Image: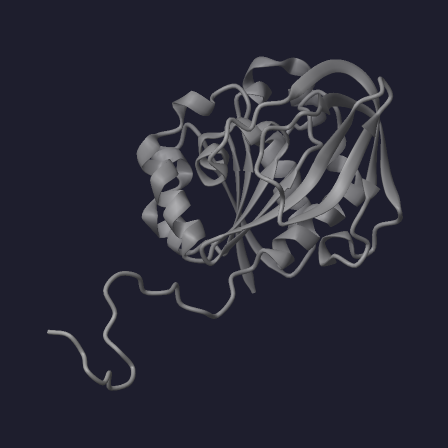
Length: 242
């Protein structure tokens, strides 16, 4: 059974009654509850817990980490970011949601600013499936339509995705690369755009299905990370220099 940790900074829920009303158990709670209906062993972690809830013990027992953050990216410890990054390079899956594009961990793994255009106007978003054979969209129709979402628009300053799974169109006219996969070391990463805190996006069954599919896709493979550095020859080398 895959072990999944859903991480959320859990700040909007404490500051904004609108968010608390939509997500009474927190954004992390809503995502974890949806994932728990699948064959996953799910736990949650939040920013204000010891070591942000991402202790060595938790990370060592996490196959896939789901990440949501917005207000408090700078409060995440660089030490924890380094530990999470190393775990990804060694095979842990990482699902980065919505405003997690600006998280320290995503920017570290992407190596770019990860900046974008945005507008909060409660407009319609249509997420078009542009890779219908991808396992992340298993069971999803040709698009997902959300009646109200925050707009993210191009240019999105990320490396070219290994695979582009979703492309969003917004009522105001913008488009956005809203479902992107990457491989870093032995780990697999999926960035999924929707999920603004004042809209009930994570209660949408299609959004829940995509996240669950992504967790399964990002599961670690049974392969040790390659060994780097000076290497001894596998075969005898004729005329080898001293």
